[in-house]
Image 1 (cartoon, rainbow, N blue to C red):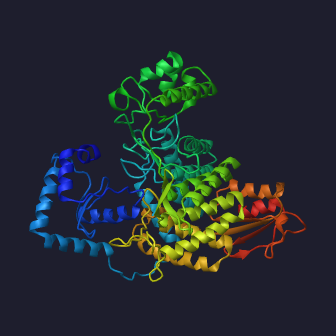
Image 2: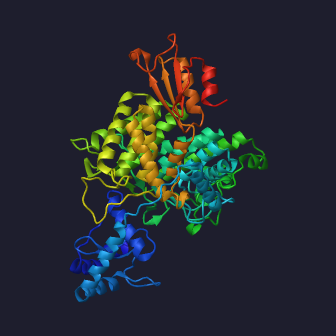
Amino acid sequence: MERECFEDQEVADVLNNYYICIKVDREERPDVDGIYMAACQAMVGQGGWPLTVLMTPDKKPFFAGTYFPKHSKMGRMGLMELLPRIHQGWHSNRDEILKSSEDIVTMLQGSKEVREEISLSKDILEQAYLQLAERFDHKYGGFGKAPKFPTPHNMLFLLRYWRLFGEVKALAMVDKTLTAMLQGGIYDHLGYGFARYSTDQKWLAPHFEKMLYDNALLCYTYLEAYQCTGNKEFARVAEEILTYVLRDMTAEEGGFYSAEDADSEGQEGKFYVFTRQEVLDVLGEEEGGIFAECYHITQEGNFEQGKNILNRIGDDVEEYARKVNKSKEVVEELLRRGREKLYQVREERIHPYKDDKILTAWNALMITAFAKASRILNNKKYAKVAEQALGFIYEKLRRHDGRLLARYRDGEAAYLAYLDDYAFLLLALIEVYEATFVSKYLEQAVKIAADMKGLFWDAEEGGFYFYGIDGEELITRPKELYDGAIPSGNSVAALALQKLADLTGDSKLGVIAELQLHFCAQEAFLYPAAYTFFMMAIDYYIADRTKVVIVGVEDSSRQAMLEVINKNFLPNVVTRVFDSKEGENKDYKSIEDKTTAYICRNFNCQAPITDIQLFINNITNK
């Protein structure tokens, strides 16, 4: 629409003559986008982007849709026909339009019905699992048909379901999906990172846009799947995602950029695809032939105009190595060299546009991934990156009074932060604390939780509003619960508040967390599979939640205990460390000057442990 309509003089003349035009960046103003998307869905039955809304001067919508061409075609009304017609209606039938807009706003505001309290039990988790299993694609992995979105929180939930119930099919669904994705064209085999979604069922042809939030959540998912399976390919992909983010998506000041476009030179995917001849020209006939065979690069191509999307679908290097009478190691090395050479050639091309906005919420998700990686992959460099990015948020994305802001670009921070910004940052601070055990991050988490409650909490009905009490007053003040491409702030808050309550022992936080769980469950029980991040919060609540406190100096015993926690998949364990060099703690003391662990499971604390093997047996339930 930008090229076809908004840059067209005829359309611009009609718009400027009859309307006041407002263009909204939905990433900067998700509050506006969310409200009017809900209006569109109510009026049309579906939504999407670009989102086109016509409203009264007091911001009440009366007409909405998505894509409109310049002129009517293929059953779609064009803007040149629509805009004059609505202008005429505004003058001849304004009362009816105003009444329609009032009805829509009333519907959006909704009735405050009192729902029956839902039990927070394993039943709702089982329902979510069964619903995901019903939609699972056994042939290609993922859920549903094309277009296929990664939806990492589906898999994060399934990993927890597998651990809680011992359901091997849940783990198999995750393994199948993650393997199919890393082999598919949705993954950038040369420069790393995942595209936003696959346009086909088997993860081959992506919409080439890369989003920071997808890569953050997928990195986190691959790391946890590595813990569960020991599959080193999962660890490799997680590291490659972080390599991509550090190389291409990190600002000098330490924050992370938002996205990279799908298009370059006016064509989607042009930057990423190759003809077979291009590969042979770079790598030579023999090596290029092997590379082309392994990455399914053909003369005909699997994309437009004989071009190819690199993929390893159905990958079996060992079998291919036998076929060409080479060792697997030789073939893998040849492929590695080929990837490096083709990457360098690709770097000479015109790059897709980079959206260099730095968004607090998305940065928090990426910080969480870096902190998680530092623990699971035992790489302190990643923790430093996470700390630097946190420092960027605290330095550049806060107002003088401490109020978080949502977006930074070109030296300017703007827009009061939303619930997602606070909830995601809260989770990030907890993750960074558990990666570094620097006490200031826990202190900052406590402050963020208090601010989040003060700005967004509904003391009457429970739940968190999307925008704060100090935000611009819109036609409605929604509470978003659905876990879409990004988990909702309410779902993330439900998990993060429980973890923070356990880490700090603050019973007031625990009360808010439990109220939040009950509030979200009232909607989530209708179709639990649409709220899989919230299902993770319920899993944390009902499973064996465990607090581990380790007291002692930074020695081999303390490191050994932490390695056990980091190596194993223990999603319901939170860890605090007190360094005995910094003085005695009144609640937790080291025994006989040895590193000492206190393990409290479901609020029942065991005798302190100094023996490493006993600690291992206890923490892993062996």
